[in-house]
Image (cartoon, rainbow over all chains, first blue to last red; front, top):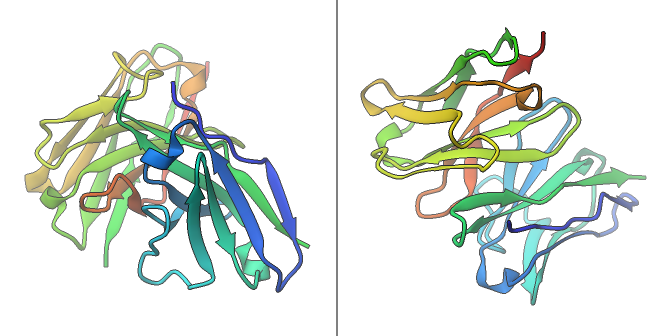
Length: 108
Length: 119
């Protein structure tokens, strides 16, 4: 089955840039979506189709992809960005949605 | 305002059954594909099942295939998940989530309903 690999944790100081990576085989041929989940809350879509933002999501959140790695970049990090972040793709070979294991972003 | 409200979560014994419901409002329900996604306590997100707008296309995660059944009633703006032969590892918060049109990304989520499988 298809696997997406994320680092368990990322730490960043306020005002700096955080980068959360997501790796998978042949990821370049798939659309990557990113979610933010704060404790006790439902996930929120922050980036879809690699680099598009839903309405209401700050421009500080951006996505990119190079080869087999996708990256969620959060610029000018704020304390309120502290959350778990998940990447997700649709695997057409298995007709399954696949989530990465999640990355806990800590704002120092 | 788009709203998704899950219900039906409960404590159930292993081997038992449960039916979850998701009531949708604030959008044209019949025009959107829907999903169930679950999250075990302290764990990550796990996709459970997908259903297309008309219900003609359905997919399941391997972990629930043959035990869970997804369905929808477009006339009642409702999504369902029938869960049979429940196991301890099915314990989780279950979310219903709407797909962006034409994109396999979940743009709206409910608040979740807790299913606990334990004797």
